[in-house]
Amino acid sequence: MVLTQVQAIAPGTIIAPQEFGLEPILRVHDRQFVNFLQTAWDEWVLAHGEYDALPLNWAVRTMRHDRIPEAIDGKLSYYSFDAGTPITKGTWRAAQSAANVSLTGVKQLQQGDRAAFALCRPPGHHAAADFYGGYCFLNNAAIAAQALRDGGCDRVAILDVDYHHGNGTQAIFYDREDVLFVSLHADPLQDFPYFLGFADEYGTGKGEGYNVNYPLRWGTSWEQYEATLQAAIAKVQHYSPDAIVVSLGVDTFCEDPISRFRLTSDNFLRIGAMLSLLDRPTLFVLEGGYAIEAIGLNAVNVLLGFENG
Image 1: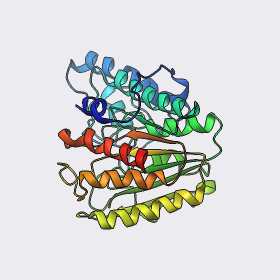
Image 2: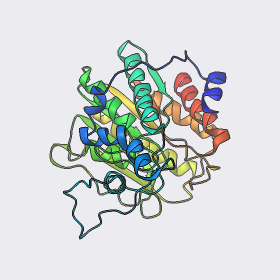
Image 3: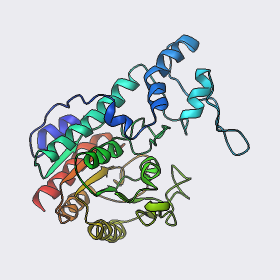
């Protein structure tokens, strides 16, 4: 559905992703975690049969976090943070392919393109270095940002406009000054992922001051959102990055079934136009969006707004 809509109205040429192997993924993700994702389905089938693999329990407060269980049920519980992200037969292949899509977008920027759109599925911004959740297994935006750094960019900014906070991206770069993370999202007091994304999370160590969150309450209108996005863009502009990665969630749409903001399809054109004013090489990485009929239209509207801005 999304690809069909993009093919119909998106600017630019659509190309297939290239293969980049595990090295750029391991620049962001823990090797044991990646090994787990590669083998989890086979281990699950051997233990339980061919149905969705979900965690059994989590190591909360008084439980220990320093031992990785041997049983697949325990491994799923250790490496995930929610019960809504099953591992299935094609999970690893899809996750690695999505990472390759984002890395192909990086390559387009490195070859001189002003912008590229990585149509990733599954999304990635909830995945941290060593855990998955929120439908995310590998953090496509973080992998792209690190690849841009490794390719010669001194500073990279990640601007996350998904409805939900990119807790995984924040965690990956929280102690770093070379990657700025700025996020507009639903207040974690009200919405998933609940336990990260507050305004008082600034970064730590060298990363202090390079993590900026703008939590917004249910019912946020375009006027409120636009003013906050202007503040977020000002933060990015002040940072003066060599390249920008936009975690492009379109679940801020007023008809999204699991979200509670009030943006319309036309508002996404304005988002793209505002982002174009940053005048930096920009990689858009698709994150969330659950109003199925409108995902492609809203994502493409951001791209058209950027192109024409």
